[in-house]
Image (cartoon, rainbow, N blue to C red; front, side, top):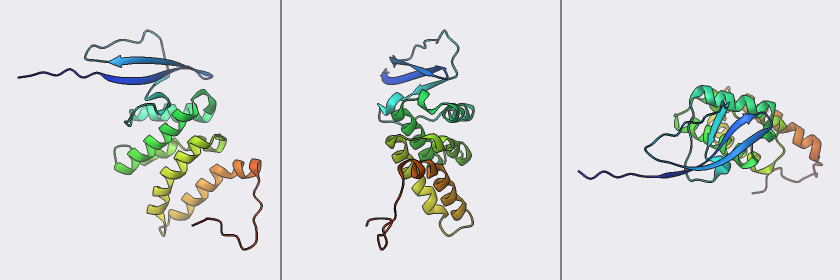
Length: 168
């Protein structure tokens, strides 16, 4: 029998205070290292720097969502985008309940960075498509619109008569 040992590089951040994150780079192997400080949660996959999705336990997903709602800027924009994308992708595949996945989008009414919004629009488009024509379709569209309303107010929108909303 041949045994292999694999090393997975993980870029991570530990969320210690509501206004800061600590960036650490480490390699996880078969030995375990204990973190000797109390943390609220641990982000594996910090700033979307690796090619894998991270599924946290349900309590951690809700803790992350709560942190995003109270202080979105405490998490790097790339990490916010990755969290939303991971959660909704795992919701779509069934490895995360949709209530926990959608919880990650509640903070979007405070989001002004392009990267998280791009991820959110892409990820929620699948949900919207699946709900189109159902009783839940209109409430989903209203929800996404309400989350983006602050952007319309801040950036403005002047419709031009005869112009299509979406360019095809």
